[in-house]
Image 1 (cartoon, rainbow, N blue to C red):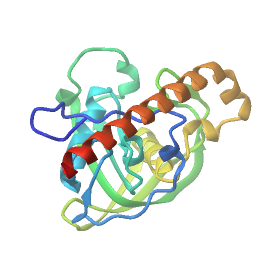
Image 2 (cartoon, rainbow, N blue to C red):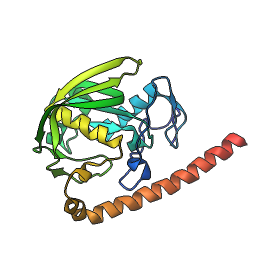
Image 3 (tube, rainbow, N blue to C red):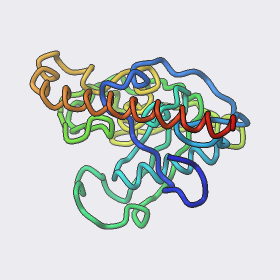
Length: 220
């Protein structure tokens, strides 16, 4: 895992059970230098671009910085020509269907329509293979955020895109979509979640070894 030119241009996605996914992320500036664990320091723009590539590779519609090990208030998302949930498992290149890409720093969501929608099925790249309906989300939201040039932006979204933004904003506060469902839903997936927790622990152990090796190389 490195950000050098000969490395894969994607990040490992952190799994359920990784402590970084439960931390409340901190604000950032567009001029910051960020270091994804296991990679060399990068600009915010470089991190955002790699997050988008990681998201496409995983066939997702959004990805928050904590999901790649960065506890900062940043997420990326896309709007496709049609809902990705209807194309799960297909091999068509997602980039060919992208209508808009979004990179949002320090997003603040405001509800525009208080009526809740529970009709969509949600999944999560950090909880692969688990999908559930019934997550109550506002039908329309306004998002105030900073873009990669440091400019303040405001965007309104409804229906599926509003749900995507709410899902990713939850990640910045350490919240999974399963947390918004009755506890018995999580219990129904107990075995899968325990397996993810074991994988998360193994990854962190491997990462600690890698980071120790990198420190030794820098000091030698």
